[in-house]
Length: 209
Image (cartoon, rainbow, N blue to C red; front, side):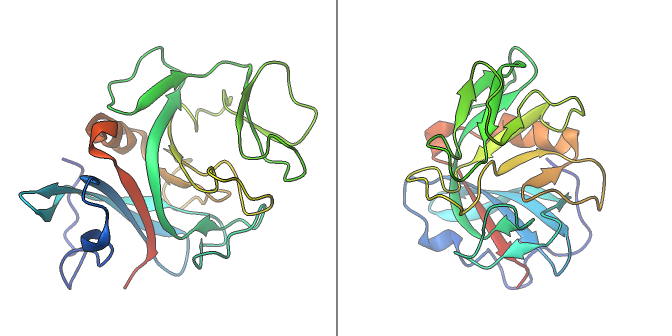
């Protein structure tokens, strides 16, 4: 299990979004953000018809400008989108990582397009360095050593609503992202090991109640 937190994560029981999820969804990563950039991440599983917390909350960080209200995230605004999104893909620098997600090793030829004018906006591309604005997936600082793609604005892609939203390794406690969710490397590895596409996992990004 992830590191325990002495404070109760949900004073009123399970997160209100969980009972409304599709029946095939058996795993949920819940991210609760406060008024700043500090958040908490926990893992939940549906067992015998009810939701149970199986990964204790750990500290996380979100975008430098906090969490955007649902539907209000925009490209370059420094905010993390609110809502519920699928988790299917992971990537990193290692050849293989123990995870039930679809994992792909990135090289210096892998990029994520963040230019909203491009026909490849919010898409992973491989090849020569793009001439349009992009994220380098094989970063030199190790933030993407392990990462999970948060399927925000990926199907369909709407220009300008935001791109390259990941769950990845943080710079350190309290240090914000540009719009992603980030946690300590050890915590992210535990989450990766737990997630399984056969259980149709999602991530819920919400304000603290």
